[in-house]
Image 1 (cartoon, rainbow, N blue to C red):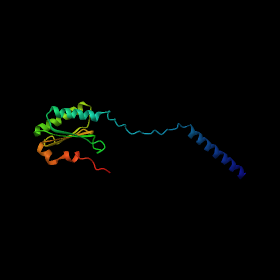
Image 2 (cartoon, helix red, strand yellow):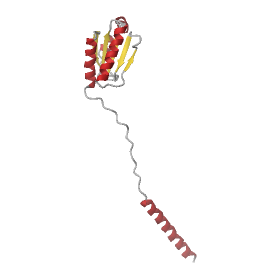
Image 3 (cartoon, rainbow, N blue to C red):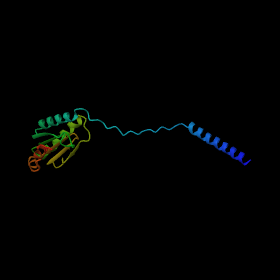
Image 4 (cartoon, rainbow, N blue to C red):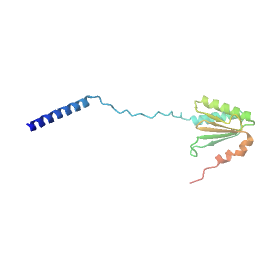
Length: 156
């Protein structure tokens, strides 16, 4: 009789386990959704070159002096191009920075940073792919960025 009770209890246990398994199987399966990273906006093809052309045009039209364009591609991860130019006065240097900022925005560039415009001695316009240094002549001579960046990198 005890053996019969054990078999009955085992059957009940297996039936309830089967019911639980059936309930689990009947529940809708949740699929894991993979969260994707937000997509970065790609830089439009040729934008750095367009920005370089626009900057050189603005600097020439606004009578900047000693304009030097340096290609940084393959030399630095900072930017693709660097421009160094001089203005006669601090007011002209600040005005050049304003005109460059407007030209870059017109091309669709965002996150343009302008530093040093208040003093007008050395103004940095950072547009990501292109960096423009605007100096008064004596400040440019003192820092001499032309010779630092114009040098060719050492061979390996």
